[in-house]
Amino acid sequence: MARVRFSFDATACADPLAALSAKLPDEVFTICSSHPTDDGIVGLIELDTTTPEMVKRAFEDASSVTYELLYEDGQTLAIQYLIPPTETNRILRSVGVLPRFPATLQDGWLRAEHTGSHEQLAQLPEEMAAAGIPYEIESITQTYDPRELLTDRQHEFITAALEQGYYASPRECTLTELADEFGVNPSAASGVLHRAEATLIKESFSESLPFDDHHQDD
Image (tube, rainbow, N blue to C red):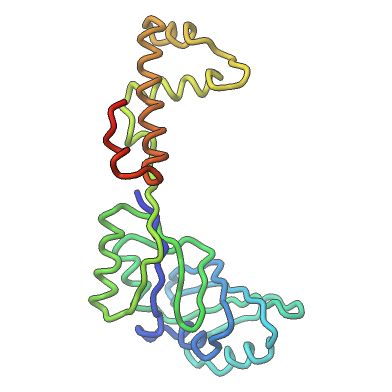
């Protein structure tokens, strides 16, 4: 799995909320939630603004945006909105990747973090480019599930060691007790744990090590 920080120009696909944002280029809309319904896309945004009346007028003038002001406290607004389905939402759903919230929308550009498989995330820029939507990849971070890195036996040993307090300080379980549970001698148990620990540590630090260090055998 991977996590990508991705931004795109939502005004390029007739997104009415993005168009409204472009008319208020200095305002940062924090999108707290967004999900498709039978009536369109329903979402919640918050923003801190020095011109709340201007923001409210912009929403009133946006014919394709239905909104409800849920909260107002001085310079803070919370607004629930409903917009028609958008091309970018269709792309994200077809690829199987949706934004993690909160996301931000400023001057028509939506910035959010997305998580998915390498195959899914590779499709995302391809689909955006095919639709003529400008985009930027701001960062890519590798994520992993320990079960994808370890053998079944290593995963069983690590899980049992964690559950029984082998890694607690002070230890609540000895290596001999852990080995007895699996019917092996302490040396064999130690070998399984060390190989599992080495795999997890190397994976955790792989992105920060120089390339040549990835291939050292010591």
